[in-house]
Image (spheres, rainbow, N blue to C red):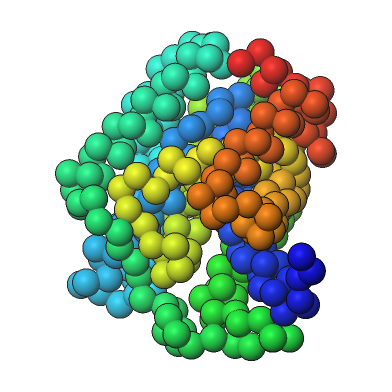
Length: 298
């Protein structure tokens, strides 16, 4: 069955929208992995906390202040997770850290269920409403989609500048390269680890706020995002920020066009199939190196 150009463009827009969200989650995995060697499976919960907190704050303050407050609270939560569950461990195995972060994500979901409820929530659209849409080459694009692409794309670019053009970013890169050597050079590696959790939590929270009007958010929405973000990270090459962004876009497009081929119920199965395929065929990912291939051990 042939696909018309407007439907093709519609699938592309949907794929890029979700792909850039997966890319942000994947970059969160990468930031923490590069600095600590930890695979943080609570990463998806940062998007959930950001979205749910913003929905609550928006009842009392303006939307921009609600988003800023949600990002700040989520960054504090990221720092608390590192201090309470990670900092006191001495050279833990990767498998132990996976189990700990999965446990943390379960605890966060249970707390979120008691703080809020099991219903879906959403912020209002930043501009326009749920029915307003732009028409480009026959495809309808919601203004909120442009917000998602613009804000998440800006985060990725600013993160790259942060790592390359600021002393703090270069210190984090030094920790990623060799933590022992960085410590000998006078870098406080403990603070760098905490900063990596704070930074990834802030990015996740902002992404959760921006995407909330489109996808809605609820207490358990972080689990699927964590799986897809991790898939994007290993697809692009765990440890590569650019690879994580590219992996997210590839996964988003595969999911989007997969709906055209497969029933919608199998949409989430695409991510699992991609993850298994990468782990079996190329554990280092598309842009990764041999270091990322250590995932084969799990």
